[in-house]
Image (tube, rainbow, N blue to C red):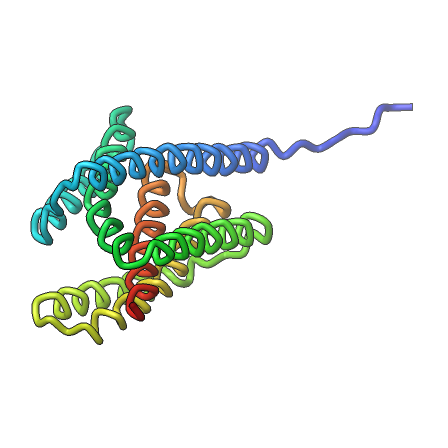
Amino acid sequence: MQPERQTVNYGATSVTETRNRVLRNTYALLGMSLVVSAVMAWVSLAFALPHPGLFITLGVYFGLLWAVHQFRDRDFAILLVFALTGFLGYTIGPIIGFYLQANPNIVINALATTAAVFIGLSAYVVTTKKDFSFMGGFLVAGILAAFVAGLAAYFFNMPGLSLAVSYAFVMLMVGLILWETSRIVNGGETNYVLATVTLFVSIFNLFTSLMHIFGSDE
């Protein structure tokens, strides 16, 4: 008798290993980025550091975001990720301090809700491997529109519009988490640095938007 021949699909195995590696590296770097951001938020809060202001915040944010995308395949891209997430942590410190003075439950509830949403959505996509790539165009248009509306609410002092933008950002960030996680799981995203930044920004915006929503009743 001849031994039974087994067909091994090395291509499929290689793709699966790549996806698992990207997913592993993304969550590892995301976890470290959240720690860096939390530490910087604590430093900013503990030493009552002033918020840098809208224009500086946007300038540094988009500058570091550009640098991360430009050097995403270089070793020091990870340092750029930490610089970006650390800076955003610094900017959120005064905001957290404001809501802590108003009502600490605002921050606690926003943090708990953000964690539950992220973990739940991530687990759903990783388990089902459902493809949410179709949401890409909608998310880009939605985020751009919400960003412009947010600037209008800021400059023209429109609290109602600002609150509506926060609700919009919650929905958009939920979609962005589903979209990016789906891209990782289904092989659409192979760079864990970019994946980490997208997920971190989603979590950051989700958290800040929820604080605004929960604090609107105070």
